[in-house]
Structure formats: structure tokens, C-alpha cells
Image 1 (cartoon, helix red, strand yellow):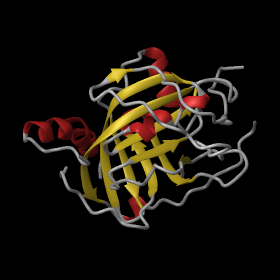
Image 2 (cartoon, rainbow, N blue to C red):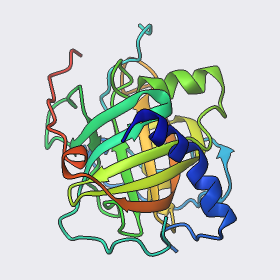
Image 3 (cartoon, helix red, strand yellow):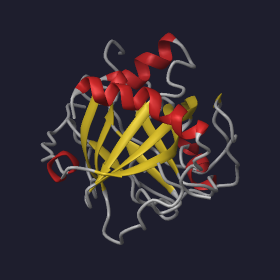
Length: 238
């Protein structure tokens, strides 16, 4: 799809669907250590929030640069996984792979978190995608929030899946500083389908994480090649 067409679609489609009365779909990072115990509820409207109390995870991540529509949609395929994430307005376009079973998270890709309570798009539950705050990855999320804590609200996120679908989301909430111990509490407490994005805010796992929450509004068929890019993960320096 040409850039001009995609840009028009991303800017106008949420408003058109809202005006037409279309209902939104749906009613770590590395898993090291113990499982999370959620007990918090999310705000239903766009907000800039703070982290809730939660359980204990420690997450390695690279520092940011410069630091020391349909209401039903397709049924959830049992083997569907996220394969590509695009936020065109931020210049983000990354293959998505499963989180590594061990070791440090790779660069040049985003990763989906596999954990009890999380799922893939179209499942009615939370999908969790994360990547380093580095050039060519999720650094634009961090720099946007550093400029303005509300700058990401209403931006369109497109998540492609292995079964040739594209899921459209609109960013509704930004949580700038989430302690590592708490990062899964919000995603697991969600009662409707959501997409959560995460990146780092500092040079090591003692720094809080940036979380971005997006709500689904449309599912559409996607070109097979567009939906299934070949990932080229590389080892990250750390």
C-alpha cells in the first residue's frame, strides 16, 4: 500500500469507525523468575498513568541512546502469532518474534511475551510486545514521551499476524515509568483485548520501563509477504 494511502487510512479510519458506531474488538518482556500476580484495573479512557504495585521480575534491556474494523473480527486461530509491528507515524516497522527462551533479548526485532494470561491478537486478551530503546527499534516511543507525555495518544499501531491478518489499534494510555517488579500487573488486569508495548528508559534493569496501551478497532486481511517478513535478529551489546 502506498504511503499516502496508508497515512490517510491511519489518520481517518478510527474517526470514521467511531462516527459509524463500530464497536471496538473484544468485549516477561522476559519471563525470568516468578509469575506476576495482577490486582489492578486499567483506566477506560486515554490517560497518562503511573505504575501500580505488582510482583517481582527483573528485565535486562539496552539503554536508550544518549544515556550512561469489525466488532467480531476473525476468530482467534490457535496457531496465530504476531509477526510484524508498524507505527508509521513514528517510523517503527519491525518483525516480531517469540521471546528468547534464555539469554539477552536480540536487536533488530520486537518480541512478544509468552506468559500465563497473555495471548495473541484476536484472543480477547492482552498481547504484549517489547523491544529495545534503540535506533530502528522502539526508541521513537521513548523520545516521543520525553518530548510530551501525551504525544503518543491516538496514534495508530498495526500488528500483523502469521495468518495474514492486520490488527489496527489506537494508543489510549501511556505509563512512563513502570518499576520492573510491576510491569505485568496492568496487562494481566485488563478485562478487554488490548495491545501493550514496552521499552526501556535507562541503561539497565534497575530503571523503570515505558508502557504504552492501545485498543483494537479494526481487523483486515493482509498480504502474505507484508504480514510475514523474514526477521534478522542480531546479538545486542550489553
